[in-house]
Image (cartoon, rainbow, N blue to C red):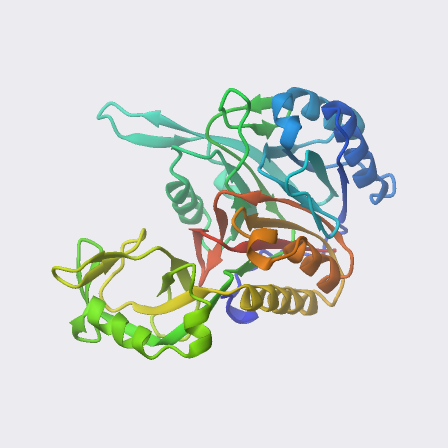
Length: 398
């Protein structure tokens, strides 16, 4: 669940005359579809040059990513470009699940300082890995990051970006599409890449991040009172599993009926309960000692709370959080990017277009593009994190 707007890290330097356009095509030919989507995106820029383009592709277009990229470059001639392949794209209020499509997002930001980059890992003399290709620290603003699926240290990259520019939000999603040869597909400038992560940092651009985790809280916040090697041993002074079972035993009939996806554990990244939680699952349980663990190491003194997947809560929370961002921007954002989990969509909500329509309807039909990701990136309580089953959005001021 997202927190109050006052706790959202915002990159604000000055009011920028930013224009954003988006387009989508479900055409069969990769180059033609890219040209069609890019041309539609450009029309909303009123003749202004394209300072930044993002392209996301799916379906049969994964067989010829170079043709997709060539079509976008031909139609837009952008100063900077990033993108990736995905399981499905979304644009203009619609999902394109199970279909071949290309969506293009184009921005004119004449006074902004933009820098694209390609992060990779390099082995050091002692056998450890280090990140190569981080952007210039002096130019880091709000950042969009698109990592490859598979063996890339996404959280380490987020930590490095945060350490370089504290307080600046990082948003994005892990690419979810592979070539017929099983390789990741990333776009950077005029290149098709298959490793690392591509990104862009936007200094001087006003960006409001939005993270909606698609869950409902179950029971009260609980304090972690014993930890060993990141594993939770005790909660509220009792064995961790016993404390969580007490909560589960008190579930209402509705909560029991809607927890088919299993219960998840949210970990607060603030020093007191009631703030944003990073929700992860499934729980790993050791019945012998009554301990529990999740993907993220948990510190003693942290607050945790059980959560459950809930389509109704997910739909309303995203709209509520988007409305807060729109209000903060005076009701007239220039555009948005949306990265939603590939486990959401029609399988979760029971009908298509839920997340895409939320942006279209809540933010007033602004230019939007994005994709279904294999992991979503966004800030929680000031920490840039990788999420599961979320919808994360970057909302850009005019």
